[in-house]
Amino acid sequence: MSENDLIELGFERTDETAESWGGDNDWYYYALDLGGLALISNASDEWDSDGIWVEIMETEIKFKGSGDLWDLVDILKRNL
Image (cartoon, rainbow, N blue to C red; front, side):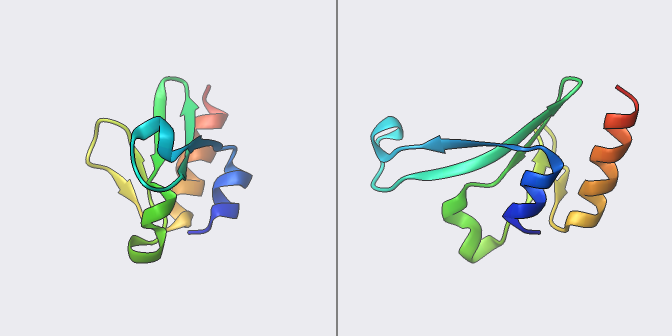
C-alpha cells in the first residue's frame, strides 16, 4: 500500500510534532471516518520497517494491501 493510495481514498493527513507528543521526531498518519467507522494508518515513522497498513479503530482488523481497503471504502461510500 502506498501513501498515494490513502490520499486517493480520501484519507486526511494528521501531523504530530516532536514537541506535541514529547518525542524526538515528527511523524504523521492518515485517517478516514466513514459513517462513524474510523480507519487509521500506522505512523509514518513505522513505514520503513512495517510498511503502510490501515486498521479499523478499536478492532483487530488490519489491511496490509490496498485492494481490500479500496473495496471496503467503495462499499461504505456507496451505502452512506
